[in-house]
Image 1: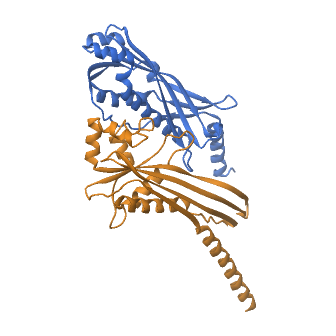
Image 2: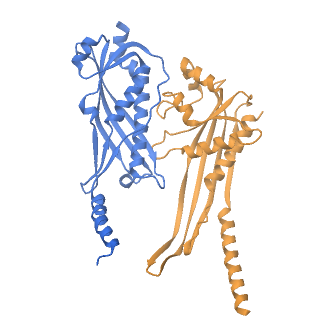
Image 3: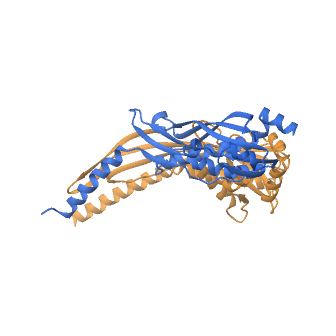
Length: 226
Length: 202
């Protein structure tokens, strides 16, 4: 009876520890900053396109993140019509490639002089181009996990921890007026843990997912805005 | 009596050791969009010579061993086949410059790869695979005289990702470089000074 009680208490403690770690791992801190330069609004027949900036030398905005933000904007009853990035880039080829894409909203006017560009833009019904620039990096890796395979079985023991930092900036361009209407930046950080007692248990902070969610929600309200 | 598993191991082990020693072969493949630009009122013959068609770059390890054979000739031909008809009124392919004379075209275009460079994360310590290509483009009269001879460079990169092989990443970076070539070529062709003068005098 006593032994049973001890086992129950031991399991409870282990469960409690895992729950605590999971809660800590779930803690991601996200900040969002918005800077509005002009009025916004979107009609039901208009759409937005989200494009990743890929001009930097040693990194580039991940297309998965761009797709995630687009999905977030399209969600819900107030969801916006979002043109998929690759479909837009292929249709607009070669005008929005890393080396040829406009870097300032004023350059959009020059680009729209090209008949094909203006026609394609009109076909998509693009009202806003949202440029997303940023990346997620892993910092402060500590700990070590060692795994052993023996004839009787295999197992790992140890502990690892790291911090992820996602930093993204979105610039919103009004295609109708060829001007920038605002910027939204998001910064998310979170600590991930990987304790290993026989098997490694990854407790991953959803840093990039949180950054995507917050940026997507903020962009949607900004574009619908007023 | 030998266990059947031992025979399998005996067969597989040399194969595994051999595969660990040899260089990997990467054949660049991908799809290219048609440029969304206005056509120039020109008919063009294009010559893909053997050096372009069979272009292969070999990347060596730091110890001088052959590491990757990158075959990108065919992908370049596919790229030019996608972009040239969108840029010019009429495009035909000929096997040699001499054939262009009787083809009733305005000019003959001969693209070539001059240099290919690959940067792997294991060597650069950056989290990207990079491909850099230098081209020599020639535009000739139907008699084979030079109209223009210019150099173009293209660059492509792709970030390192978990569960993505080096071969796939090299292919992705090369496809980005090919798209870069297509965009630069399509937008700068008429601005090459010699071509611009030739077009103005036509």
